[in-house]
Length: 378
Image (cartoon, rainbow, N blue to C red; front, side, top):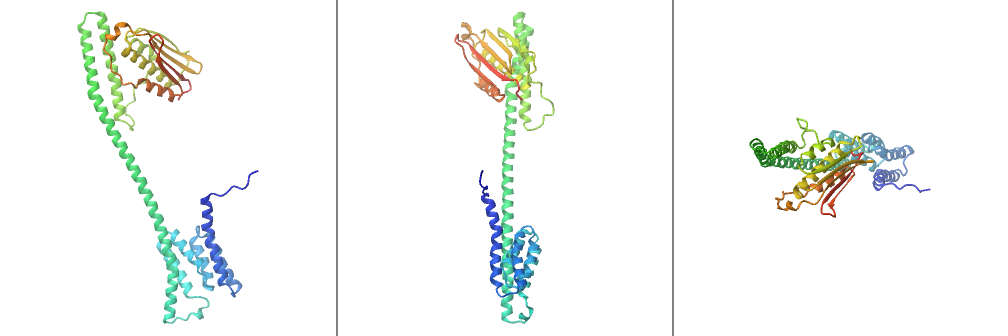
């Protein structure tokens, strides 16, 4: 068995702030009620106990404290009630009316015969005292309410500035994306277009069937690259905006034979996926893995024998691309530039899907890229 659970510190402080004025007002009522009649003491105690409801019914609590202040010289209960009205109520006229009622009750005290209405110094000083007793708590309550409202306004201003800063950062990012999109379109598309034009000219002018097929493949790859580039530029320019036209269909496992045939490499493929349906993200990751591996082989091991294997192994789709050592004459060919981020991106894509990707050289001097992608990826 466990003992009683301790109250949080904020809860303890709340109850203390609620009960402390009540206890002090009871002490005040007990001190001023010595020798008073029982009903006068009862009204003083009622005024003190009514403070328990001051946060929910501030005006009603003030009205309950006035009879005790009228028949007895209790101050703490009505002063606390006036403070609560000023701190809780939004209308200034309500605060002024409650403070005035307390000042009048304190001035015209029971019994009325003890306070003759005379324009003398004593009555003037007593009137000033009654006004100060009512105006002091009211002023403090208004100050507390103003401070609370200023803190709320300051919090709203802070959130507004943070929101404006976030919007400014997003606007700067959108501008940078648009600039990047323009540069990609102006530089890359121009160069790829020239490649496509030159390949088309070679396809028309040459009489060699092998050269004609190579030129046709180059032109087809250039056109496909331009299409993907335009799609990427559109995504960059419309970042954060719903595209007006649907994006082109993403590649799937069914597109792998076309990718392999267009690579220009001596590839031996085994694409037995088991005839099952795989999630779109998994199929797209498998396609990009084979695509990146074939691209790297074209760059660093042109002419090497390549084997591509895609198979469904239980709850995972296994993708393996292996190449043999490049031919000896491959070192004389120009090395194509690379960014060094392809395999890193593939590994991150596989990890996001809950799979793994391993890449490294083989013992005979070749290279292997192997990925295992889960079947239940979203």
